[in-house]
Length: 247
Ligand code: ADP
Image (cartoon, rainbow, N blue to C red):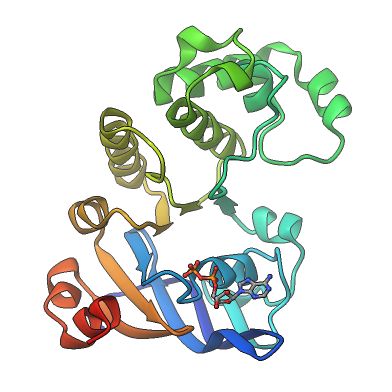
């Protein structure tokens, strides 16, 4: 549509596992500056798509671009360097490090000791504390990450993603397994960060969250998009109902 600036986009993206085409010739465009959602029934290929575009797994075919530049088959670090940060469906945190230390190591597991040593200086610590305040868990900075709740761990992971100042943030099931109060806080944070200019691409099962939060929704079924549009548009689409209800 006119006026849409592409963010992350794919053309013909394909990834098979044995005989299963988890992602099957998927052509998708997410919108820059918006809150985008990727939804679809279980097994429709959302996680595989996510992993292909963030460099975690190699697609068999197709192209991935970010703001018009190809990032196909780049390493996760280079994709992160292009401005894309991501969270993981199951939190990727270091359970025996403190909350503050987890933010200081950011999302990169490489060179952990080095990064921690290097980060023990003022500016980084100030910024990490500011991010913990922002996500609302600064009172837990000295707790070991394994001792805080699962929802708090999700907020911690988000603070870690923000530490690297990504232009675009990909969240894999931010509301999964999180209590309703924290889901509300995560939604509010996403809105605020979006208002400050960050683009979001969110894979989420919680339909209420997706529909209330997103500007643009892409619906997957059997490895490819079957509908895309505003929440109202996709909710009324018979193909979407069919995919979810299996009728
Ligand atoms: P979703 O995230 O939408 O639930 P997935 O991307 O996890 O979907 O899975 C899509 C399809 O690919 C499913 O049929 C799943 O069983 C299959 N699949 C995903 N990952 C693997 C893998 N590593 N090995 C084999 N099959 C896989």
